[in-house]
Image 1 (tube, rainbow, N blue to C red):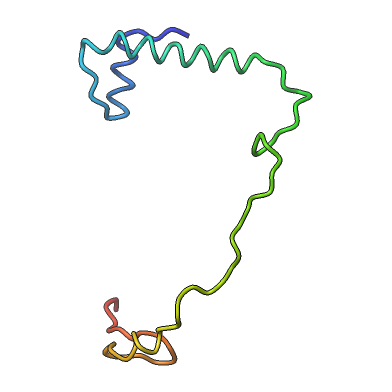
Image 2 (image 1 turned 135 degrees about the horizontal axis):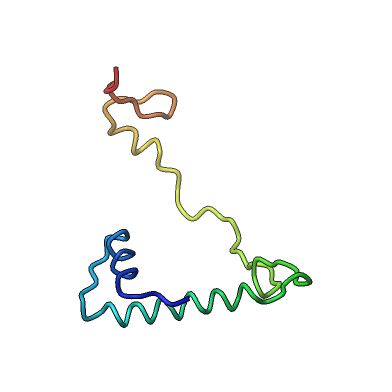
Length: 95
């Protein structure tokens, strides 16, 4: 698929991109190459290919879930203007 200058200018306007007149030909060529590649990939028969989320079948290594900080909720809430049952109380702002 080949895009011309006017199509690229229209796409740039819709996408709110600033493309100068000198850049239109280069951008048109780049976009045309991308669309040609997409057309080429769409033409490949993938009927027997199993979809996959990742090309490598690996389990993700996770770190051990351990507590690394002390519980400071009581300390932080002691300086709050108003708390109740571990929650911060704030004035109602929406009526």
